[in-house]
Image (cartoon, rainbow, N blue to C red; front, side, top):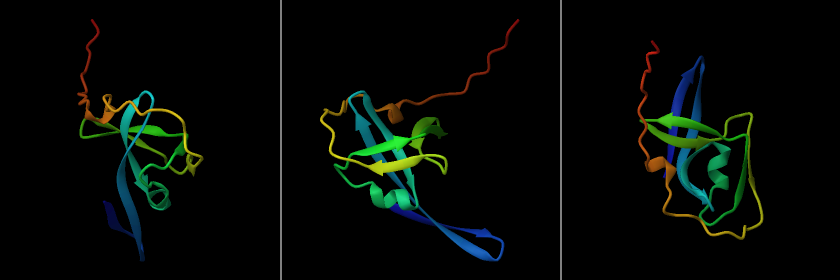
Length: 101
């Protein structure tokens, strides 16, 4: 599903497209948040290379994202089996403050 969000930035309203995609490799799965032009590249069964990807925390779970410093490239189909039983986005994390004595 693609979400279109408008945001007021001065005199112009900027439109943003956002889609969440489940991506994976031989180590596991994670939800990738595609933005704007990245949405068009993320098709089912497409092999992509993510450069300078980062982890964002969203409601206690991990999301993979590529910002303006990174890159999403469509490439030739890869020869590996996705490890579907290790979805890293399903793990819930909690921030814990540690007090050192």
